[in-house]
Length: 328
Image (tube, rainbow, N blue to C red; front, side, top):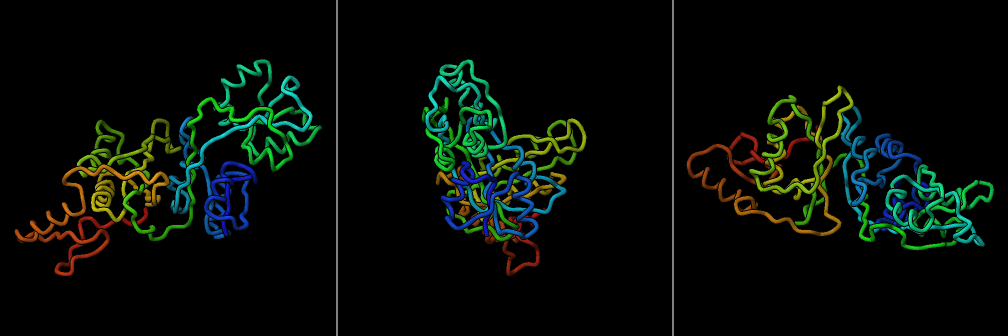
């Protein structure tokens, strides 16, 4: 059973439909959707995590990265091109639009268009674009039009007064399907690993120490941002996406390095990239390079032998140095 951050007709709903057309449960907030997975009411939920114009969705990344909540894991990502229409009840004309309702992110992405075509209209920001379309469908709502996804306009019987009104026609929103922790799907060669690192101490070089774990192993970060830990002012953690999979030697080694230098590391999953972009792995960071180095060390009589990530050397009781850390 799947769920999504609703209501029906949102971009999140559209993202879920690209994965499964089975009946799914909508939730009114991201937190409620994720908590339903934790409570085992459903198997997984689709939630937004990042927009190419507005940045990360804090409700999602803060919930997933919380030390106080039971762990969850990203299973899959979906990219949806963001397209907005200005929709109204049948019979409404553009010059009759005085009050518009939409989601805050949508309002930000159509601000220039509205300023040019409806400079005197009042824009009200509410919970979702689908809820905005639903409100406009009621003649007594006090709203003349909604900025919403085309699917929402059709769902609630509205007609478009203008289409493709987003200021940035290349805008994309990234969604993730989130479930309970388990073994990640097998590596595809074009993968991401998402994690949250909590500094051990707030001191000079603390962030550098975190970044070095990736840099020296040839792991590229495609997203990193600081988030407040919600404990004391000025105390931050770092939420990031790394190119590669837990089963890649370089990524497993970087995670172990983080575990050594950080107060806490939350592993949020390794999964296939929706854009299928392959990483640019530098010389010395490929799995074959790690194996060759391990064989050389073994030839010297060294007791740390490189096998597959997550495995243990058959000739030695010491743990593999690239073994993936458990979810923490």
